[in-house]
Length: 168
Image (tube, rainbow, N blue to C red):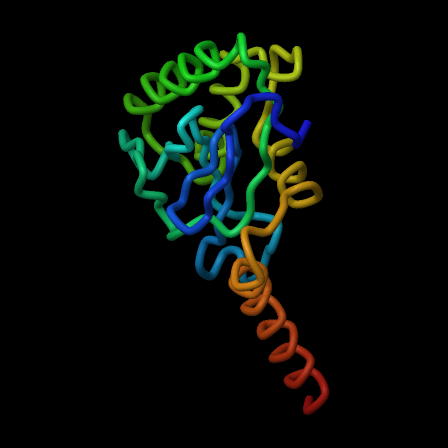
């Protein structure tokens, strides 16, 4: 599901263009302790990222927690490009009228609804937990710096815990 079937859908991390991708970035403090939890967004066919950034707010080309550090490129057939873009727009239209809830109606839910509208991978139902772990297990890092930004705070927290425990 990661390889693209669309010609010209090239990822350009330098200008934050991720066509047909689910993108992820760490959320300060939360990701430091739970490294599989982060902020999720979805890009249209041109690579423009949309994310449910807060109550009644859809970010467009302004990812809420900084540039993506991980991505998953979805396979979209050339004849389904318009459907993909329509699905992203439909999900955004729904979520721009919703209150954000960290636990149950959040950026992951927004991406799930977009994928459902696209009938992505032949599935009618997606959920935030699946997306969380799918990104954690299958997501690719944008760069070495993206890897470091994702993991260094967690490693630091573990080191502090280890030091405190060893001196106690």
